[in-house]
Image 1 (cartoon, rainbow, N blue to C red):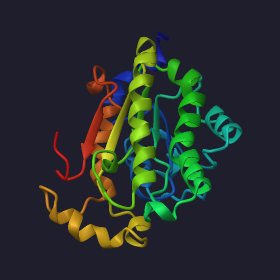
Image 2: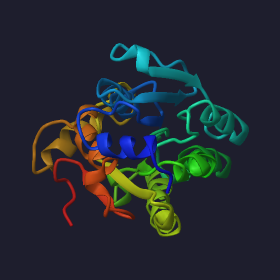
Image 3: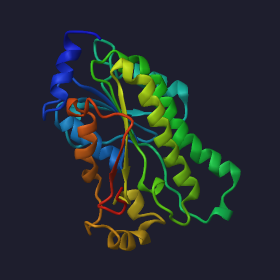
Image 4: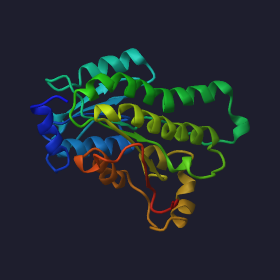
Length: 256
Protein backbone atom coordinates (compact mmCIF):
# COMPACT_ATOMS: atom_id res chain seq x y z
CA UNK A 1 0.00 0.00 0.00
CA UNK A 2 1.20 3.54 -0.69
CA UNK A 3 2.30 5.58 2.31
CA UNK A 4 2.20 9.28 3.12
CA UNK A 5 -0.72 11.37 1.95
CA UNK A 6 -3.06 8.42 1.17
CA UNK A 7 -2.75 7.37 4.83
CA UNK A 8 -3.91 10.84 5.82
CA UNK A 9 -6.93 10.44 3.58
CA UNK A 10 -7.70 7.16 5.33
CA UNK A 11 -7.64 8.80 8.75
CA UNK A 12 -9.95 11.66 7.88
CA UNK A 13 -12.44 9.69 5.81
CA UNK A 14 -14.33 8.46 8.86
CA UNK A 15 -14.64 11.88 10.49
CA UNK A 16 -16.60 14.97 9.59
CA UNK A 17 -13.44 16.29 7.94
CA UNK A 18 -12.94 14.74 4.50
CA UNK A 19 -10.20 17.15 3.46
CA UNK A 20 -7.88 15.41 1.00
CA UNK A 21 -10.38 12.74 0.00
CA UNK A 22 -11.16 12.40 -3.72
CA UNK A 23 -14.63 11.15 -4.59
CA UNK A 24 -16.57 10.42 -7.75
CA UNK A 25 -20.37 10.31 -7.71
CA UNK A 26 -22.47 9.39 -10.73
CA UNK A 27 -26.05 10.53 -11.14
CA UNK A 28 -24.88 13.70 -9.43
CA UNK A 29 -27.29 16.22 -10.94
CA UNK A 30 -30.28 15.32 -8.79
CA UNK A 31 -31.93 13.08 -6.25
CA UNK A 32 -29.79 10.71 -4.21
CA UNK A 33 -26.63 11.48 -6.18
CA UNK A 34 -26.94 15.22 -5.55
CA UNK A 35 -27.52 14.66 -1.83
CA UNK A 36 -24.36 12.56 -1.63
CA UNK A 37 -22.29 15.11 -3.57
CA UNK A 38 -23.41 17.84 -1.17
CA UNK A 39 -22.68 15.71 1.92
CA UNK A 40 -19.17 14.83 0.75
CA UNK A 41 -18.36 18.41 -0.25
CA UNK A 42 -19.68 19.81 3.02
CA UNK A 43 -17.16 17.59 4.78
CA UNK A 44 -14.28 18.88 2.68
CA UNK A 45 -13.97 16.17 0.01
CA UNK A 46 -13.06 17.06 -3.56
CA UNK A 47 -15.97 15.65 -5.52
CA UNK A 48 -16.34 15.01 -9.23
CA UNK A 49 -20.04 14.75 -9.93
CA UNK A 50 -20.82 12.93 -13.18
CA UNK A 51 -24.14 13.18 -14.96
CA UNK A 52 -25.55 13.35 -18.45
CA UNK A 53 -26.82 16.87 -17.64
CA UNK A 54 -25.17 19.79 -15.88
CA UNK A 55 -24.42 19.35 -12.19
CA UNK A 56 -25.48 22.45 -10.23
CA UNK A 57 -24.40 22.76 -6.58
CA UNK A 58 -25.16 25.24 -3.84
CA UNK A 59 -23.03 23.71 -1.06
CA UNK A 60 -19.24 23.54 -1.20
CA UNK A 61 -19.18 24.71 -4.80
CA UNK A 62 -15.44 25.24 -4.75
CA UNK A 63 -14.98 21.55 -3.93
CA UNK A 64 -17.35 20.15 -6.56
CA UNK A 65 -16.55 19.71 -10.22
CA UNK A 66 -19.52 18.91 -12.40
CA UNK A 67 -18.72 16.72 -15.39
CA UNK A 68 -21.04 16.02 -18.30
CA UNK A 69 -20.60 12.29 -18.79
CA UNK A 70 -22.69 9.47 -20.21
CA UNK A 71 -21.77 6.49 -18.03
CA UNK A 72 -22.77 4.10 -20.80
CA UNK A 73 -19.83 5.45 -22.84
CA UNK A 74 -16.58 3.82 -21.63
CA UNK A 75 -14.36 6.45 -23.28
CA UNK A 76 -16.28 9.29 -21.63
CA UNK A 77 -16.03 7.58 -18.24
CA UNK A 78 -12.30 6.99 -18.68
CA UNK A 79 -11.72 10.66 -19.47
CA UNK A 80 -13.83 11.87 -16.55
CA UNK A 81 -12.05 9.66 -14.04
CA UNK A 82 -8.59 10.56 -15.32
CA UNK A 83 -9.36 14.17 -14.38
CA UNK A 84 -10.74 13.30 -10.94
CA UNK A 85 -7.63 11.96 -9.25
CA UNK A 86 -5.54 13.28 -6.37
CA UNK A 87 -1.95 14.41 -6.99
CA UNK A 88 -0.93 10.82 -6.19
CA UNK A 89 -3.20 9.51 -8.93
CA UNK A 90 -5.74 8.08 -6.49
CA UNK A 91 -9.51 8.12 -6.17
CA UNK A 92 -10.69 7.21 -2.68
CA UNK A 93 -14.46 6.92 -3.10
CA UNK A 94 -16.65 5.88 -6.02
CA UNK A 95 -20.42 6.07 -5.59
CA UNK A 96 -22.52 4.83 -8.51
CA UNK A 97 -25.97 6.39 -8.26
CA UNK A 98 -26.86 6.93 -11.94
CA UNK A 99 -29.87 5.06 -13.23
CA UNK A 100 -33.53 5.26 -14.15
CA UNK A 101 -36.63 3.51 -12.82
CA UNK A 102 -39.35 3.02 -15.45
CA UNK A 103 -42.61 1.42 -14.35
CA UNK A 104 -44.90 -0.34 -16.80
CA UNK A 105 -46.39 -3.81 -17.33
CA UNK A 106 -43.99 -6.45 -18.58
CA UNK A 107 -45.82 -7.01 -21.87
CA UNK A 108 -45.28 -3.36 -22.76
CA UNK A 109 -41.50 -3.75 -22.72
CA UNK A 110 -39.53 -4.39 -25.89
CA UNK A 111 -36.19 -6.14 -25.88
CA UNK A 112 -34.59 -2.92 -27.11
CA UNK A 113 -36.01 -1.00 -24.15
CA UNK A 114 -34.80 -3.62 -21.71
CA UNK A 115 -31.32 -3.61 -23.23
CA UNK A 116 -31.17 0.20 -23.00
CA UNK A 117 -32.15 0.03 -19.32
CA UNK A 118 -29.52 -2.64 -18.71
CA UNK A 119 -26.83 -0.54 -20.42
CA UNK A 120 -27.52 2.33 -18.05
CA UNK A 121 -28.34 0.66 -14.73
CA UNK A 122 -25.80 -2.16 -14.98
CA UNK A 123 -23.45 -1.33 -17.85
CA UNK A 124 -22.93 2.19 -16.52
CA UNK A 125 -21.89 0.83 -13.12
CA UNK A 126 -19.56 -1.69 -14.78
CA UNK A 127 -17.90 1.06 -16.83
CA UNK A 128 -17.35 3.32 -13.82
CA UNK A 129 -16.01 0.62 -11.49
CA UNK A 130 -13.78 -0.93 -14.14
CA UNK A 131 -12.25 2.40 -15.17
CA UNK A 132 -11.81 3.45 -11.53
CA UNK A 133 -9.83 0.36 -10.50
CA UNK A 134 -6.29 1.72 -11.05
CA UNK A 135 -7.11 4.86 -9.09
CA UNK A 136 -8.85 3.03 -6.25
CA UNK A 137 -5.86 0.73 -5.89
CA UNK A 138 -3.63 3.76 -5.31
CA UNK A 139 -5.76 4.82 -2.36
CA UNK A 140 -5.06 3.44 1.08
CA UNK A 141 -8.79 2.98 1.64
CA UNK A 142 -10.63 2.58 -1.64
CA UNK A 143 -14.40 2.51 -1.24
CA UNK A 144 -17.05 1.63 -3.81
CA UNK A 145 -20.74 2.03 -3.01
CA UNK A 146 -23.39 1.03 -5.53
CA UNK A 147 -26.91 2.42 -5.25
CA UNK A 148 -29.31 -0.41 -5.99
CA UNK A 149 -32.96 -0.51 -4.85
CA UNK A 150 -35.17 -2.32 -2.38
CA UNK A 151 -37.02 -3.46 -5.51
CA UNK A 152 -34.31 -6.12 -5.65
CA UNK A 153 -35.80 -7.59 -2.44
CA UNK A 154 -39.50 -7.17 -3.19
CA UNK A 155 -42.15 -8.38 -5.63
CA UNK A 156 -43.61 -5.21 -7.15
CA UNK A 157 -45.76 -5.37 -10.31
CA UNK A 158 -44.50 -3.23 -13.18
CA UNK A 159 -40.87 -3.21 -12.12
CA UNK A 160 -39.58 -6.57 -13.39
CA UNK A 161 -36.88 -5.21 -15.78
CA UNK A 162 -35.87 -2.52 -13.30
CA UNK A 163 -35.69 -4.99 -10.41
CA UNK A 164 -33.57 -7.31 -12.55
CA UNK A 165 -30.99 -4.57 -13.14
CA UNK A 166 -30.87 -3.64 -9.47
CA UNK A 167 -30.53 -7.26 -8.34
CA UNK A 168 -27.65 -7.63 -10.80
CA UNK A 169 -25.73 -4.91 -8.95
CA UNK A 170 -25.79 -6.99 -5.78
CA UNK A 171 -24.22 -9.99 -7.49
CA UNK A 172 -21.69 -7.73 -9.19
CA UNK A 173 -20.71 -6.12 -5.89
CA UNK A 174 -20.22 -9.41 -4.07
CA UNK A 175 -17.87 -10.81 -6.69
CA UNK A 176 -16.04 -7.49 -7.09
CA UNK A 177 -15.59 -7.32 -3.31
CA UNK A 178 -13.85 -10.69 -3.33
CA UNK A 179 -11.61 -9.66 -6.20
CA UNK A 180 -10.62 -6.26 -4.80
CA UNK A 181 -10.22 -7.14 -1.12
CA UNK A 182 -6.48 -7.88 -1.50
CA UNK A 183 -6.06 -4.31 -2.79
CA UNK A 184 -7.75 -2.83 0.29
CA UNK A 185 -10.81 -1.79 -1.73
CA UNK A 186 -14.25 -2.50 -0.32
CA UNK A 187 -17.38 -2.81 -2.44
CA UNK A 188 -20.83 -2.51 -0.90
CA UNK A 189 -24.41 -1.79 -1.92
CA UNK A 190 -27.21 0.32 -0.52
CA UNK A 191 -30.79 -0.52 -1.43
CA UNK A 192 -33.02 2.52 -0.90
CA UNK A 193 -36.77 2.27 -0.77
CA UNK A 194 -38.94 4.58 -2.82
CA UNK A 195 -37.25 7.95 -2.32
CA UNK A 196 -38.76 11.40 -2.73
CA UNK A 197 -36.56 12.67 -5.52
CA UNK A 198 -37.88 15.20 -8.00
CA UNK A 199 -37.93 12.50 -10.69
CA UNK A 200 -39.99 10.14 -8.52
CA UNK A 201 -42.41 12.78 -7.28
CA UNK A 202 -43.00 14.02 -10.81
CA UNK A 203 -43.07 10.63 -12.51
CA UNK A 204 -45.29 7.61 -12.87
CA UNK A 205 -44.22 6.18 -9.50
CA UNK A 206 -45.71 9.11 -7.57
CA UNK A 207 -48.93 7.21 -6.72
CA UNK A 208 -46.83 4.54 -4.99
CA UNK A 209 -45.67 6.82 -2.17
CA UNK A 210 -48.79 6.52 0.02
CA UNK A 211 -48.96 2.68 0.00
CA UNK A 212 -45.19 2.36 0.36
CA UNK A 213 -45.13 4.61 3.43
CA UNK A 214 -48.10 2.73 4.89
CA UNK A 215 -46.10 -0.49 4.61
CA UNK A 216 -42.95 0.87 6.28
CA UNK A 217 -42.13 0.43 9.95
CA UNK A 218 -41.08 4.09 10.02
CA UNK A 219 -44.05 5.77 8.41
CA UNK A 220 -42.68 8.79 6.71
CA UNK A 221 -41.48 9.38 3.20
CA UNK A 222 -37.85 8.50 2.50
CA UNK A 223 -35.84 11.57 1.48
CA UNK A 224 -32.49 11.63 -0.40
CA UNK A 225 -30.71 12.88 2.74
CA UNK A 226 -31.79 9.69 4.54
CA UNK A 227 -29.23 7.81 2.44
CA UNK A 228 -26.31 10.01 3.46
CA UNK A 229 -25.44 8.48 6.83
CA UNK A 230 -25.38 4.91 5.59
CA UNK A 231 -23.35 5.71 2.50
CA UNK A 232 -20.83 7.80 4.44
CA UNK A 233 -20.37 4.92 6.88
CA UNK A 234 -19.57 2.57 3.99
CA UNK A 235 -17.03 5.14 2.75
CA UNK A 236 -15.25 5.46 6.09
CA UNK A 237 -12.51 3.56 7.95
CA UNK A 238 -15.20 2.46 10.40
CA UNK A 239 -16.41 0.08 7.69
CA UNK A 240 -12.95 -1.32 6.90
CA UNK A 241 -14.17 -4.86 7.61
CA UNK A 242 -17.45 -4.44 5.74
CA UNK A 243 -17.39 -5.56 2.12
CA UNK A 244 -19.66 -7.47 -0.21
CA UNK A 245 -22.65 -6.40 1.89
CA UNK A 246 -26.06 -4.90 1.24
CA UNK A 247 -27.42 -2.11 3.47
CA UNK A 248 -31.17 -1.72 3.13
CA UNK A 249 -32.38 1.84 3.78
CA UNK A 250 -36.14 1.88 3.31
CA UNK A 251 -37.82 2.73 6.61
CA UNK A 252 -38.37 -0.94 7.33
CA UNK A 253 -40.33 -1.97 4.23
CA UNK A 254 -38.09 -5.03 4.06
CA UNK A 255 -36.49 -6.66 7.09
CA UNK A 256 -33.99 -9.51 6.94
